[in-house]
Length: 248
Length: 280
Image 1: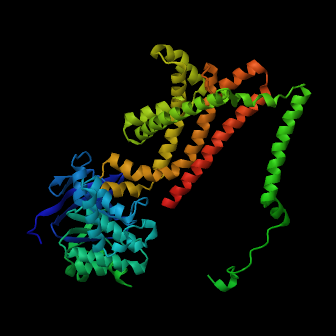
Image 2 (image 1 turned 180 degrees about the vertical axis):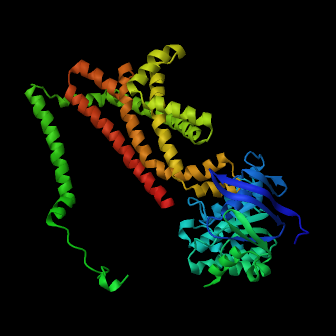
Image 3 (image 1 turned 30 degrees about the vertical axis):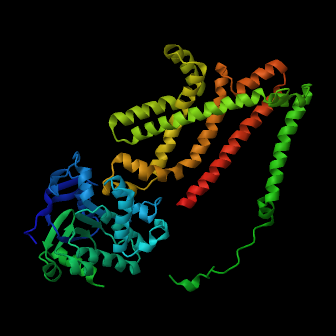
């Protein structure tokens, strides 16, 4: 995988919230087409890290290069970067005043300047991709959680981004809906998209991840391929965490 | 927890409200109480006027509302005055909303200068009486910028209410979940686009009820411009009284006209609100 061009490069990244040291000296590279799964206990900085990747949070020191552009607070290119980096949120964050189809069309129309007809085509294509074409004219509140999250994934796909970030996409879902979302994500893996996924779904991670990352207290404790990560992690803390979440 | 210890309330008949609650909670009782209070007020003023030896002349009132002459149906002075009140209020409200949005956005901009200017404006306008503001516009700024009575009135009302409206807008904007901002940003929208397509359409739902109150407030406070003799409803009423000495009849009529206008506004907006609620 390492012969591919790096899409996200993180060097000595530090992030503070007031005096709280949220990210401590993070070093990480995500290559094109790589699927990286980030896990760790809550409060370990996983979400903060991936929110830095599309400029929803800004780091305080170190370097972050996304798709060849350096990301920092005053970057003029920040909107261009966000168009290349899609994000799926834990709470879906669909636009409740727009129908499903309008949710998918508004980005392409207003940001990418596509015509209404082209945006409509794109939206329907990706709604098909997430298997809910029949919900196009409903409002988000009329859908189940799993359907809403699939719409959110389609909304990001409509921007035809090169990188997709997932911030605990299944954590707010009822158990019986988790699989429909994970299935869509697995299908996305097959398209060769670069993906960074924060999740506790270890079955999914084992199936799709190229690289596993374990974070704790704002630090990366372990980066390893899944075979090694799940069978023989090098750090004791990672072993303990895995034991805890794999017990059931 | 041992569920068996707590008898299940599911399916149980709700306790019957007490006789007192049933009587005072009924619609009929509410209407009766309302009628009694209103009757008391009307009777009170009638008796008061009687004791003053007041000579009621209701029959002379309609000519100020409308009349039939040889030229046909004519609007009376008071209705023409009402027209100006509405025009004044509508213009002032449009200006106040535009200015209020500007102040709210400045305050939310996160720029130090922006929020300082917004807060300064807000505190200045909120903490001086409307009447003083009117004098300021008419007697101080008027001669400098050549403002006539009407313009000075519109500006006074617009500035005064823009401060209140900006707070309503700010609250409405803040009421939209932060996740909406993040989602809009994550698909590459600019701040302006996010406001226009995502945030403002959602905040209308939160803004409508207090904004209705603000419009009603504005229509009523427009009466204050009668002190600089802008020929709106209150001024006309005062002029008629000085001609006819029918203080009670005219002021009651003026009050009823204001009430009719503001009630129509409130009812109209509640229909719009219902539509927005369905839209969600």
